[in-house]
Amino acid sequence: MLARAGGLVANCILGVILSAIGWAMGSLIPVEKT
Amino acid sequence: MNEKLDFVRLPLALIAIFFIGNLILGATGASYDVAKRLFSMVILQTHIALLWAPLGRRYRGYSIGGAIASVVLVIFVSKILIWGATIFSYLTGVHTYFDDPVAITGSAQEFRSEGRCSRVPVDWSQIVSSA
Image 1: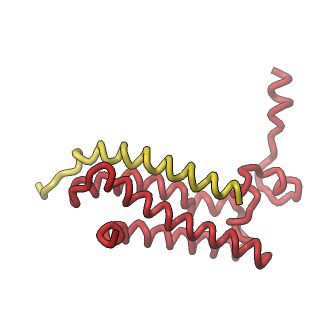
Image 2 (image 1 turned 45 degrees about the horizontal axis):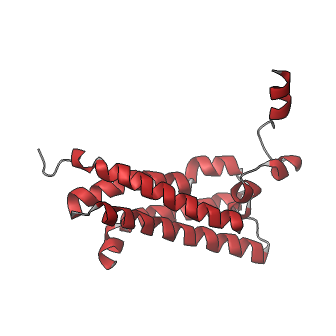
């Protein structure tokens, strides 16, 4: 279960980093229909 | 929290579908490699993180913290399912992908020694020493 605990931490860190990258790219999404 | 749960309903549904897909493939006896190509929950998490955070920013006005919180919520639910299935497998002795040696230790050594892996094992120490 230690590996599972490590996986939880690693996945959370990965998720935070990728979310931040994704959030930074959020302005590329159009607000309204063109 | 309820607002974020509402926002991540689709990712949670996808996580549930992938989880059930893993269970079904495990029950049918498909190899671990095939199952992970079709229903890798970690890969799904990375895609959700990259796609749902910007959607939250654009359509819900989330700050970076709010966007991260919504994605971490999805990861936590996914991990609860994975932990639950792992504990279930160990307690009952029922083999699923969640107690697979590759999933637990990241190594296929145990699996390969049983001759159940479709790939030919590579002895990297021999390759390195012969170079």
